[in-house]
Amino acid sequence: MVDQGSGADIIYPNLFKGLNLKLEDLIAYDSPLISFEGKAVVQKGQIRLPVQSGKEVVNVDFIVVDVYSPYMAIMARPWLHTLGDVSSTLHVKVKFPSGDQIEELIGSQFVAR
Image (cartoon, rainbow, N blue to C red; front, side, top):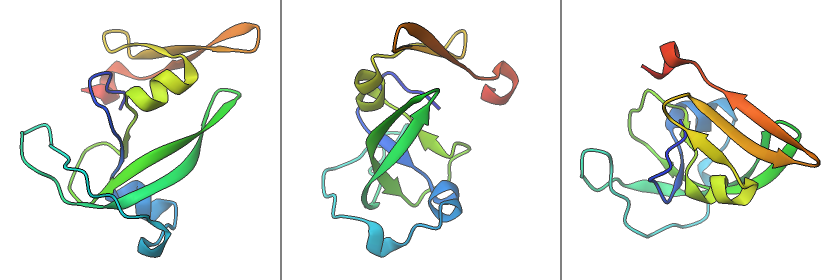
């Protein structure tokens, strides 16, 4: 999920386990994190991972949380700004410059619902 309003890139348990990451791979992260429901979320730590978007690869600092979510990750302002992305939640698209062209990531309206 791309969330233009969030200041933190988040990884949820399914992706953390799917990437075969271990708790010892994490570094400490102690800043408060508030969920969509307005409740404090206990984070497991932080990890820097490479993320490929089209041809571009950028390192992203993710906060790892251990709560249920229908999403595997939330890509937020830090990732958007690093790539120079422009996102549209209405169109479920992200566009960003890559070399001398514009790349486009297209999501699914059906899956987003």
